[in-house]
Length: 305
Image (cartoon, rainbow, N blue to C red; front, side, top):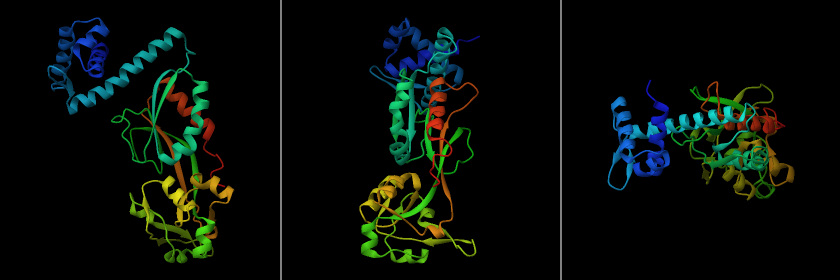
């Protein structure tokens, strides 16, 4: 049987070190042996993975895909061998790449990082914050924290918490422009919108007498691509926004923001999930991190108050 795992290790080292010679030195192989192994992979797959020049190596699109998956497989093999060698209770270790939306990352994930790393000191945590939906394979992320309903996917997801959505404004803004008493009053106010999905600029409200849900088209002079920016602009008195309670809970408690039109709140929620490439044998570092978030954030963290 072909030693495909060994070949993947050679390929990964050659790409990461950008050199057949350097990969050979690390693995105890000659540069020509490294070249033959990679050529054998390309022949078996029927496609070019690397474009080679005298000074550099460049991945082809097919090579990018192969490299991303080979990285995971090699890491899983290394971790499996360490776990067996150290016993079943071996602590999670190694590089863990996490991508999170900006507001959840800033308000929920980053405050927990010191506690997680104290518990698992052999894990190296690499956290990126972005409000774009990342491709876990393409971005080489192990775990992504996503806000909103989950679409059908081959990825696994664990719900971390859910947060009621509220309409908010600062006392200064309301003192200057008046307090809306009915959803239709919002048509006369500066409402802070998002620039990535126009549907979010139609805010739903529930008639307290009939229970029927209606939407109000809102408009304003400021757009942003994340809730943290909208929250900051609200605190600064720029206008009215509609955000998940986890964004603004501290501001409401401190009196920096006021929840509006609560009698008309339709009770909709934002869901927050940890998403990962899942299978029966998850890497210990991934499983431990997702379990840790579930333990510390939970599916009911009081966000629905």
